[in-house]
Every structure is written in C-alpha cells, then in structure tokens.
Image (cartoon, rainbow, N blue to C red; front, side, top):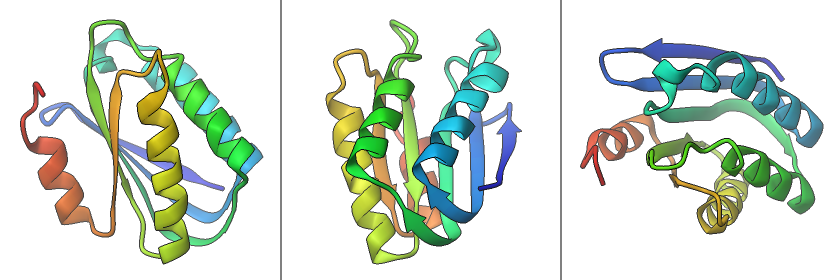
Length: 134
C-alpha cells in the first residue's frame, strides 16, 4: 500500500495519504518506516498528523493488526509532548476500523497522541488546528 508524506513546517503538520489496499502487514511496515524516517527526527516531535485513507479501495485489517499498530505508534510517543492524529476515511467500514484504532491508541499507557476519525478533510483540519496546546 503506497504512502505519500507531506510536511508543512508552518502548520507543524505531517499529512500521509494512503492509496490501494489497506492490509495489516503493509500498514505495520509503513508505520515502522515512517517512525524511522520522519518521526525519529527531533524537529518533527511536536507535529500533528493527518492520515488520509479516503482513496483506499479495500480494507483487510484484523483486530490483532490494529492493536499492534496502536502499540507500535504509542511506543514512539515522546514523553511530555502531546500531539493529535486525525484519520480521514470515506467508507463506513473504514470509519469502524478507524474508531477501533482510535480506541486502542487512546488507551495505551505510553500513548500521548489524541486520535480522532473523520469522514472529511475539512472537519479533520479544523480539529487538528483547534486548541493546539490541548
């Protein structure tokens, strides 16, 4: 599943756009690469994220895969730095899967990132930009 990252230094925002099919092992591999290539750089620690799944054509995700994604992501949160992640989806199945990830990610003991799922980009952006220091 291809991922394209755009970094907006002014807004302190990293947008990842996904396409193709969403599959557990590909998402886990892509998250690991993202953490190594981008999130490991200190200038991006305080950046918020938007992950856009609106062009994904099918989803093959398991509960175990979603939990593993949440654990991997939470384990790289930086102590003392709270950020937001907006997940954008178009399909009802994707919304349900996104909410599952949101739930697991928000309850991880090491997790400091607030996660929400949205059905459109404008609502996600309003939330990301609101109350920056929540």
